[in-house]
Length: 582
Image (cartoon, rainbow, N blue to C red):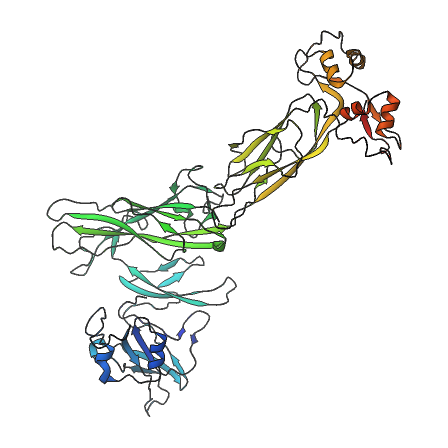
């Protein structure tokens, strides 16, 4: 961690609106090391005092910055920076001394000493120091600082420079307060074209560390998203469905909804209006980027261009990422003088912009039902008449693909096929729907067909290891009329009679509306003729008995009645009222 010089750092407690929380116990000795300590090194020194005679051995932090190992400390992988013994004795005139300034036992160099102020309430309580008088804010309950419920920190007329801020974060019910510390760098700004954009840097002190850096860069964020209807929340849909837009209105505290298993692509653009200039004082302006903590598998492309510059964020969240992730960025300028030996001015960063990703599990597709969509009621069909049934399915995740097919357990009737799948926009749906047509012309032997055809709509399962496809099911009951056949153009009674194992005279007698057996006036695809009689079985009748009584062969009766098993009802007979075609 980086702490600014002169800042007040609290150890063992924090102050907040819910009351001060302090360490209650004994502080025996604190030691600060430059580098990670080994377990054996900790055990070796934890019960031994630090002796000034070993200063060369420990390494003196006042001699060099950054700290470097001395000639005699090669056996150790870290260097002692400071040691405080907390050996405090209150004077007789102030037995309950409120504050004691502690000098470190090590190092002995005055230049390297960092004094520690300990607030002592009694012999068993040590409390941290308050904010010092240098203008550095450590904690403020109103006045110079405020913070909204969404986490937006506002500093009211702050002093230029670094500010150390401590904010308490808790659950929504106000429990489990945790302090979060960070630094805020307040830049010297004279004016801005708009809020935080096109701001001019102007120093009052001389020399100015920003001399040569005139403007603060700006940061824009682009992504292919659609508004969810709130005006501040969006859903990532990908470049195939929407063009990338400036998502400034959807940034934190707004949200961008994404789905596990599917890559999100966001473009960052940095721009500094102080472009490359020519002449004796010419500078070259580059704009880069910095970010806060990002998820493990998030990737960034190389920066494209110098000013403006662009960089892409690429991330495929998985199920362990479901929830929310807030990622923050800023654009950072760099002005390089063309004159050799001329130092570059201090860089400035844009306002920080954050994306709050709301990661949802990949949803299951759903069938769309309604007029012109997937039917939910029984469909009545006719032999010889072409039927076309629309199937439509959609998913909330526009990046996923939904495929429609027959359920593996469905017995698909002969001649039934699914047409080519297409994608189309549907009113009321954010994502395009998949549409597929069931094509079927019931044949001569499908009279009495009564089954449910079941279909599936499944997605891809995403791109995460172990991802599984999600499946939705939908069934449609289809019934083919008995004794009725749809005429085709130029079809004659003799041809139809041969198909059904009868004579044209029988068909002509069943259809009184036909004026002449050889000349049928075709009335369109809905024109049908009777090709037999409906018969309701009596109690206990069997198919073989009915065929014998009607003078028919059992095979002919089976042909006319789809799905009837002539042997299945020999012992018990057909149910009373069962319908047959004769």
